[in-house]
Image (tube, rainbow, N blue to C red; front, side):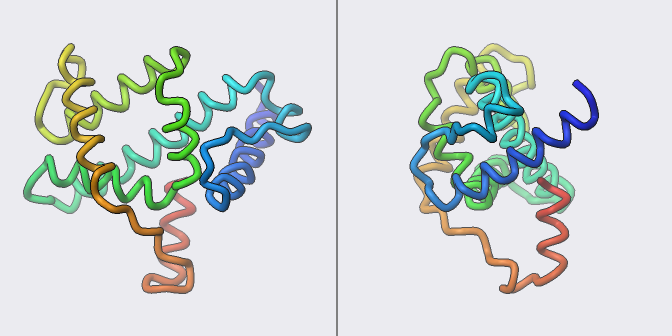
Amino acid sequence: MTWDAYNRRKTVLRELLEVADLRRDGVLPWDARVEQVFETPSELLFDLQMHWFQRLSGEVDRRIDRGDVDPESAAVSAWRQAAAHAPGARAILDAHDDDPLLAKAHAKELSMLAHAAGRAPLHHPAAPRIGARLRAEARAISIEDAPSAGSHGGWFLRLRQALAA
């Protein structure tokens, strides 16, 4: 993939995520513009999953760096925060949760969550099951919308969000 193609994909993905955040209907947007840079809906779904995984792992890293006392609560909180900042992506991924094409990516995500919580080594066979329990716990807690750019945090919050994206 060329650098230009990579940048076009990231631009289209960012625009798609803005639409998904407004709609929150779990439908993977697919139109002529998206089709110009992604060959298949599956390819787009993989990029969306990677975007989500990067956001989630960034939230987990922030909590570890802060030294949150309880790793399990930190992992659940990280998932909730990532979901609050990317509700459209989360809705699409939830709608495709049983897609066999994403099974390996889901297992890695859940394993990372279990590992961050201190409940299983990263590549342990039980890690995805433990991560799924943590994800279910996070989903059971009401998720509020992410703070708006003009709210508490201002330009620093916008900068942090841009770096996390």
